[in-house]
Image (cartoon, rainbow, N blue to C red; front, top):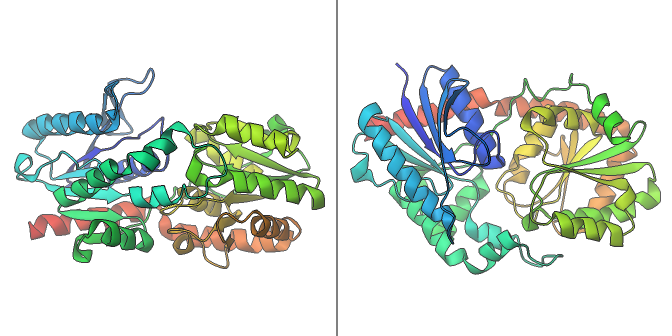
Length: 394
């Protein structure tokens, strides 16, 4: 018999980042495995307030237009979950990020409360150290309001019966910064849809649309945020072009740093070989991975890095930084890891792969094999197993 599961999240399909991808794919896989899943998420743009999508019952709440509206949204989401619990009787309430901040156990006496950490606020703040660009609006929140959000994150974990983290490094952070008992923490990584992201996808249409036929394509996918380390990639690109003039950088994503990054590319003289696509719909991402020669993730901080799994599943070699949970995701046979905030090392690793197509192919194949163990179906099964263990131990 399946479980009644409620996710409380700040991101979900069709507008989402890593947290939203994880929630969407988990909810979909859990539904496929015979469970009933409800998702409570913010209302963004012209999305429907209520709908059923691929078997997932979705409720979208309009976020308060007030200072610190993120925290106020989670209070509203918890109240919605409480109302739904009266009629549905959730077996599990699973909070993403601050999802369990206001889900008190006395309000869900017959449910288990699970909280997932996708990194920590302390780690995010550390990722802003030595920022190359003027801090953007979201970064100011991390820089100056971090005590409030770190407290909220710790409280969300304390409210939960069990805390899930996406990497061993993420677990170490949770214990160090929030004093959590290691016995209450389970490491369950993010996953990847190995059917969606596969090496048979054709990327030629993307290359033609971007005017990159017969070019070497370096891809970045992610939010244009301060901690993503994109300035170092732009600096590396200025070095790469001296040795590889047919190389182009494609940056897929949107965020508060876009204007600063575009200005930086002009100042470095690489604007003609740097393409900012804006946000790419999740359904279209496989074609962009197929169109590239390699993916680069130059983050200053990363709990795991779903885009690495997507690139590896697409049979593409990756270059990334040795931070957070990245070394647990990328093996030495599937990519090259470099120190963070180091454009020269980044350029050296990228050039090494661009000049060696056989090495790229070997790493791509190894990455595809490695990514198969992160299939969302497997990750959902591990999570359901944890739910059932918590229900038995209740």
